[in-house]
Length: 483
Image (cartoon, rainbow, N blue to C red; front, side, top):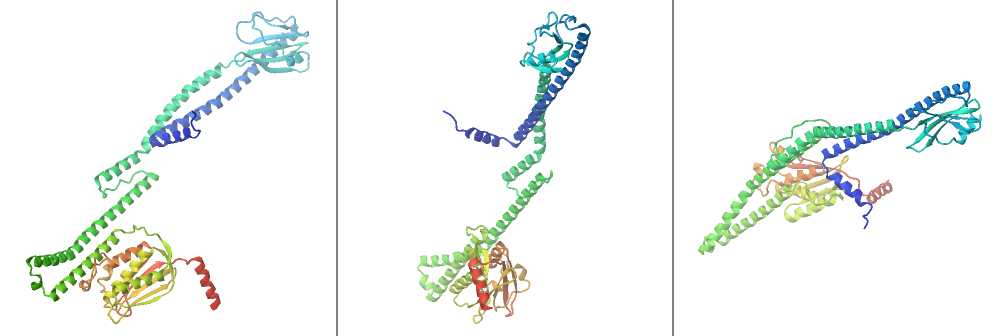
């Protein structure tokens, strides 16, 4: 059974990815040195072979010229050829009739080639040729001499190249081992800040101590990584601090309505167990107590809902979309009037487009209108204006109440903050805080000033967005027709 062709590369890739960075650097360093040594060996072997061959050819030419000079003086047939000493060069004389003479005891050379015979006949002056196999080859030089030719040959010897290759192999192995060691050392030294960073991160994870910043050391990418982690820890510290403050404030704010609700319920239960509920609480008092209970439950429900919304922060499953803010404002005004029928809302809105989350924006506008409705006199409506500014959308909610004291303005958007004059009114002090969070999440700004009617004027500015293409074309067509 054959394995799929792509399985082995994938297995090798998975094996490589499971290696540590230190091991990868070691393997890369050793591989790079091994490849470099191999390439250097190949290039050096070729150069050495060419150099040795050129030297051998030059030596053969020089020996041939000496032998040819002696042959011309003494004649090819009478030339004295000393016995073969057992090693070294090989010689041969080619006579005019094609026969050959060789020294006594000399190994036999390959037969005279046809090109060498042409040199002996005077067709060319000399010839350099190689004959034989790679293991037992000859380099033969043929030179014209008298009526024939002389040949000087040398056995092809690869031992210098082999010795050089063996030496390069040993050097290469040492270099690979040294490269692996150097790569390991460099990886350990270079990754030391990463190890300390990992240890610090593990310590923070175990101790949950977000106040311990990681020491800023190293440079380049390591330093940026440490700074990024420290920034993340700072953000987590701020988030934990905000959660702690929210929990403390929520516990404080929930204590009062829960205590009042518990006392009233205990009073009803105690009187009912005694059987004196009707005598101790006349119908009018009982109705007033039940109304107080209902109001307290409603206030507690509103507080819990606002706490839940505030605790979620910017986390929301609602997606951002392009929407007409005028529709959102109109829907919020309708909800405000249904919740407080005695509050009149006067709308002065125009179609403006923003990119945002519809439910969150509607909740923010509803909180603004509810806040203004608490202060506006019964005969004075809450004025809501929506207009387009320079690259922004401006929403204004104006009431005719007593306004906000200058001392309260800096803290009006703080969580659970309620001015002294507002403590007798229903509410949790979270409405405007939720408004600011929603506006900040949409990249806008919210502010409060005194209105022309003497009350508070809350102004929200949001980045404007281009309307959808069909609406933009329709608007352009209406403008052209009007002109």
